[in-house]
Length: 176
Image (cartoon, rainbow, N blue to C red):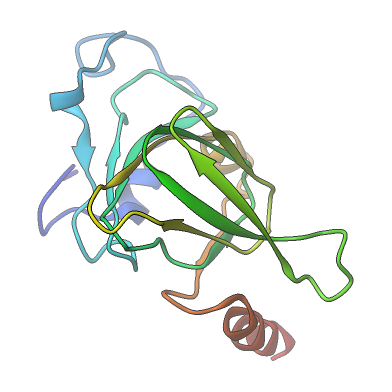
């Protein structure tokens, strides 16, 4: 299975996760920054750079290093797993669909270096880098591997849509 380049497939990568992961030559106890696997551009529908620490012998959670370029933002997405973003560098804000609002309007939260940003399961969300000249960088931790073990992995992206656009498109698709 390719871990980078044009032959890389996120579907194949996720399908290769199993419930038994043992440390060894292919799954070391330490993965260095230069060893992170870059998810090829175009595999995710946004301008961020995602690098996964996929070689670590974790069975229930996944770790990513995500960079949002200056003035850019991630895609509007939702997924079954929980996610925590630790802000390594940068300033920005996130729009996260609120479960308390009957219309599901987003809550806007601001973050800066050292902040932790929580994304609840199946909540539409999008992260914005508010700096025009510096990238924002996250360490992203998600329990996607755990859900995949139970066959419950699901992720939807509306690309660079607003929450209203994403809900209109995907709510309509779910009704079909």
